[in-house]
Length: 264
Image (cartoon, rainbow, N blue to C red; front, side, top):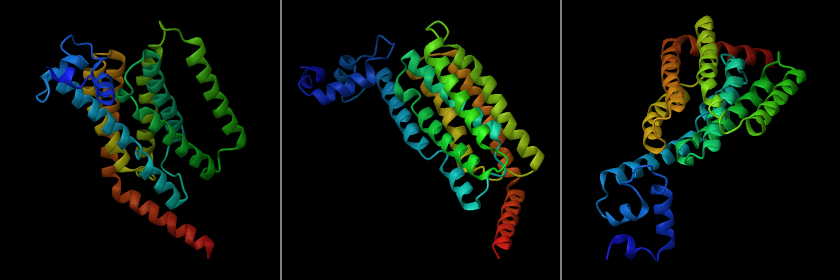
């Protein structure tokens, strides 16, 4: 009796095996085939399992992606060094990726972190609204209205034949947003509230996602192109944080002194 037959009465194991292997496009991978190969999984079954496991790990790790940035803002009571344009663009960037995968019916483990980072980016934006005096109520209302219009367009206007538009524009949004932040860093010669931990996670996550996307979804050109652009731009941001580390420390120390002086 094969392992699959022996475990056929265990609903949890069968459900787990179905979740891991049923959607794999390879004819060499299925819940039955993979369970039958236990305890030594075949190479196709093992690679799928590894991709799923890494995907889950990325999702959990993404839950603290923006935590260092949020902490820096709360500690300094300042959003200096953060580009508002880049932050708005990140919302569209992560929304495009999340909604495209949903509309395409891709496995959640292949894109789940986009939701987590999207919510955290919205928290960062709310802090920007709170600490940036140049942003008024009219600006906030306009931003919320624009995002609601975007949501309507994604879920009510786009058709299955045009879902790809979301990922076609993502590299453009990515270059615009990350480019705006890169330019701001270059002009200011410091990176303010930006975090090397967050940038490192973004860089590593994009690199790993190239591999897991190929394994779980296949060679989806639109998704892979976006991750490729993300790797390049996050690498530049990472280098900038290192180059401007001393300037950033000096800037934040001076900012802290100014606020202490005002309180006195």
